[in-house]
Image 1: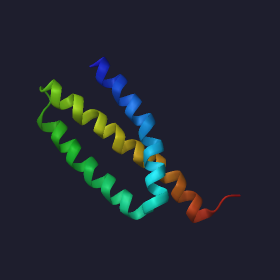
Image 2: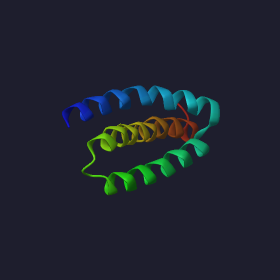
Image 3: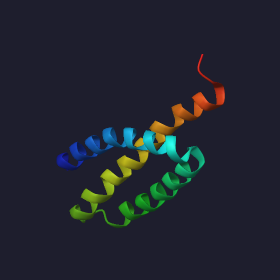
Image 4: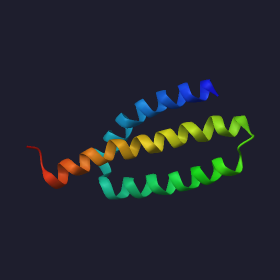
Length: 85
């Protein structure tokens, strides 16, 4: 499990840059819809495969990637809405 956590942290860090680049190309609404859909399905799959370590090694980092998208998009949205002061 510790390797899954290390890999998830690495993916989460890279994911913030990845989602930031996609935000510049596609905008907030599309990406936020995609992220929410993927978080829903990944969370459901994690619930149904708790004993399969191989599935968890794929699903938990994907969950970290999607959550990094939320953390990357929200500050950008706030800058778009309220402006930079």
